[in-house]
Amino acid sequence: MKAIHLVIHGKVQGVFFRKYTKEKAQSLKLKGTVKNLPGGSVDIIAQGDEDRLRIFIEWCHQGSPTSKVENVEMSHTAIGDYTDFEILQ
Image (cartoon, rainbow, N blue to C red; front, side, top):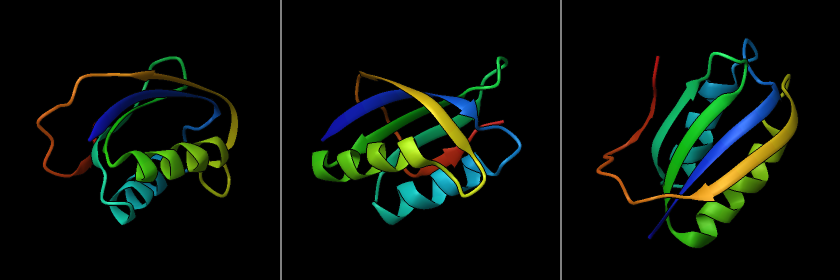
């Protein structure tokens, strides 16, 4: 199992990006969180199988149907104690 931290930049707030992110992560059986950041970006922690994470990262470069992803920052992070994939407020 691996864990990644992503920060998604672009038009990613107000376009249901978090909702679609949660749905995609759950369909891939990933655990973690997604939340909006004050500057208009979205912060994601995802953990799971490496192949499923790779698919998820590719999806994050596309985003939700009405989002416009301009940049994806990625780093590896420590495994957390997540039981599901949640939207944080």
